[in-house]
Each structure stands twice: as C-alpha cells, then as structure tokens.
Length: 293
Image (tube, rainbow, N blue to C red; front, top):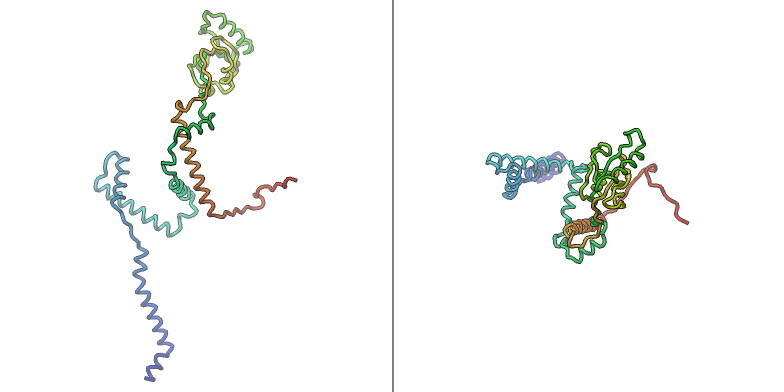
C-alpha cells in the first residue's frame, strides 16, 4: 500500500495522467467540433422550384434534368462560399454588400398595403396642398419665320421688320414660303405645352408666346438661335384640374409620399438605437459660428 501511495505521488506519473486526461477530452470533443464546423446545407423543394422558375423566365422554357442539377450545384457552391466568406468577415466594410443590406432593410420596412389605400377626401387634401405639381400648363399652337442674325447684309432687326411687314401684307395672313432664313426648327407647331416648346425654342421664347395676340403676326421674338416672327393660331390657358381629371396621378404621388414618410419614421426609430460619434480632424471640422449677442 505504501508503495502504491508513493507511486501515485510521483510527479512524472501525475504528468502522464494529466496528459492522458487532456488527450481523452480532446478525442471526445474533436469529432463533434469538426461536425459543427461542417454545417448543413439544405436545398429545399421550394428552393429548387425557385431556381427552376428563374431559369424558365430567363430562357422561356423549363430546365432539363441536367440543367436543374447544374442549378442546384451552382446554388450549393454559392452557399458554401457565402458561409466561408462570413466566417472570414469578408462582408464587413464592403460598400456593395452594405448597400445591398440597406436595400433589403428598406424593403422589409415597406408599409402594409392597407396603409397605402387612399380615399377621395385624402386625395383632395393632397391635391390642394400640391397644386403646382398637377397644374395643367398652357398650350400654344403657332407659326414662325426665322431670321438668322449671321446671314444677310442688313442687321437682323432690320430684316425682321421688313419680313414682318411682308407677312402682314400677305393675303389672309398666310405665310409666304420665300420669307425668312432656313432652319431646322419647325415652321408650324401644333397645340403643345409650353414645356415642350421650351425644349425646342428655349424658355424665354416659350414664355413670350403667352403674351402675343392670336391670329396676328408679331415680333420679333428672340431665342438662342436668333429672331422669330410669330403668329399664335391657338392658345389654351393653364388651369388647376379637378380631382377626377388627375386622380390616377394624384394617387400615385400620394402613395409615394406615404411610403417615404413611413420609411422615414422607421429609420428614425432604428436610428434612435444608436449613438453616432463623428471624429473629424481640425482642418475638416465645420466652422464654429460665434453665438448671436
């Protein structure tokens, strides 16, 4: 017995016993740990159906069995690399991934459809508060004769005056084909909104049309191209339309604003969870204004 006690107290034996215990514990846990690292990738029937549907929409036909197996293999490969990338924290500080995550969060914070259903009273109130967005702009139809300031021996203003006199003297106010200078601008413009006219002739020219008399030649009206003699043949003034005339457009913009307001509230709620500390160097810090006295 005394020999056994002395043997147990030998430092070398204790060292071997401790080592064996550690080795045994590692052996018991190593397989389980390795199994955890392997993980499991489950390709569900729903996922397979989704892969097949995307293929069908792209190629306008369902995939063959071989193609479907290829889609599944590609999905598994993507999942393997995705999980390994997460283990290496490759998703951090990647601008594209961060933006994609932001887009997904914004999608998740979309309001329920019942919050985007408008009634007439709500739409009318929105229309009244945003009349400028829905105002029907004036429309004008006109004829024009162009005077190119870079052509002719006389000043453009003098030639414009002579041409205007010839137009006024023409029978029934018709436009002689031999007057004016050649241009790619249309000689006759049908009834068009001022914004469309401004794209062709310029904003100043378009606004001037609202002041010209109808059915009489007038001018010259200046544009970025030169001088124009103009006869307004028809004009319809702008007006604020009733709701029934622009209901669809009003509803679209109302829904957009409701969605934006909802997402802003959701962001403010999430933002309140965080304290934001911005550190700037002295040369980039905003100017500090002295308080008013």
